[in-house]
Amino acid sequence: MSLEQKIMVDLKTAMFAKDEKSLRSLRAIKAAILLAKTAEGSNGEITSDEEIKLLQKLVKQRKDSLEIFQQQNRTDLAQKEIEEIEIIEKFLPQQLSVEELKEELVKIVAELGISSMADLGKVMGVASKKFAGKADGKTIATVVKELLSK
Image (tube, rainbow, N blue to C red; front, side, top):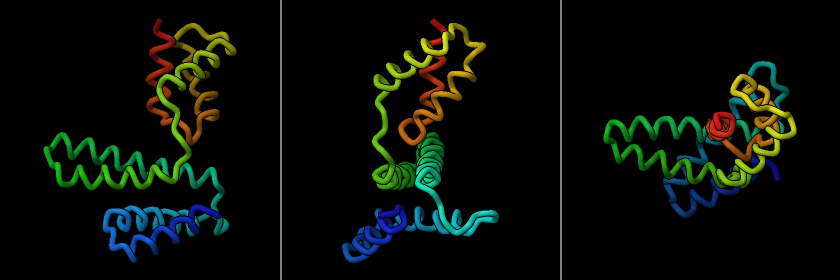
């Protein structure tokens, strides 16, 4: 079952349950999928990799908004962002913990034979491809910088 089909099933369930939190999030995902499918240059279909990138983008947008709302002490708006993040993340693959990510990155650094910050880009290139959908790019960069600064 594609992401769009899962969203439609969950959307119907949320409508019947009158679950406003889920409805808000699921409608945002559905809208993003429709935009991606109708974007210039697309063939009307999106791959599972594109679906994951789309969901990650939605989560990142909400995390950025959450950070701003927290800085401005807008707990009402921050709570809505937290709720939407939780629902959108249900459709993403299981994320790696920081410890698991660090273990894998140590292996990548050793395989590439990298020891300085100058080669950060090489590690990031390999790691970003390997952990696509399983880890946030910002988290990967933070851990890589920590490993290379030792």
